[in-house]
Length: 416
Image 1 (tube, rainbow, N blue to C red):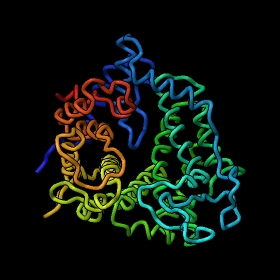
Image 2 (image 1 turned 90 degrees about the horizontal axis):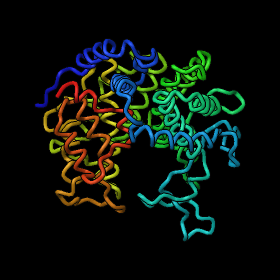
Image 3 (image 1 turned 90 degrees about the vertical axis):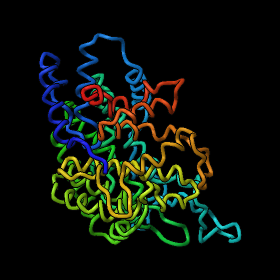
Image 4 (image 1 turned 180 degrees about the vertical axis):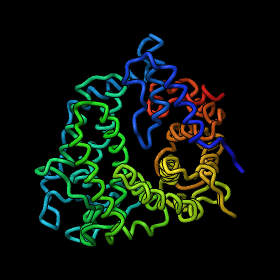
């Protein structure tokens, strides 16, 4: 049985210490941002420590500045700019095609498409998933840059990305995924297309970070919360949403992560709490074996990638559950494993101490586990995970990695 100090207890304690320690700092550094996945207390402490130290700009900030500079040259994107018209006839409706579906060479028109698991059809790049992913990823990069560097241009461009995709009536996406991951010749949309909007979790934290900037108004925040409330209703009550809820692998995990995140952002904590209380029995018990392996993901042609991807969803769920006083970090069921077991299972393979015996059609990248090791080190107050994190790249310490900003190690230093 794994145990830990209740995370909400030590986060409150650290928050109190940070408030005292940085009282003389710029007021923007005093209050942690109201994020859902990002480590708000750690970010506030890291920002205050850097401001107080007078040291040169840390590598992670330098890297973030470079990324933000590039992001300001891109976008905004909108669903209405595509040349493809969804079956509804409304360009405000999102549309994408399944990534692993290809034209059938035996058919003159290639239809119906056939599946090649793990091999992405480049046709997918012609649809709305590209703009959505860029909107979410770039807005988060820019919002982080605003938080750490206070460059108003970063905040303004991030706000413009979010307004264009979600808020302005003439460019906004309709809050549904009726045509997500269509398969030409087979279906115009599927429930599993909802995995496309997992990136919206990052957009939520971007919007929350922007609430400290004059570039993001109260009206913007209300409009975006309304959009997410509408999308949340669609997720929970549409046929596609109900289909995704009944899946058994990473689709189910990421579905719950989306529902819980969007419910918290839209001011519906009771909905989030209900979903998160059911994660233990509905998702962890059915997806993680007692040895920590994830059988549904091991069946894929990129079994390592999917195992890491699904573990990230579980860690996101545990993080969201902290907001409603539900403990998923330590859950175990009879004859099944938990989140920590799933992480421990993957570590020897990430470090090349054991050979991965399952199908992986692309090279196994152990560094994909780095962020999750940091987040586990903080959640479980386990320095061992921090040590293992640096062993992933012993000659190139990940000082410029994004997680140094989103989940800094300050908590570990406060609780050795």
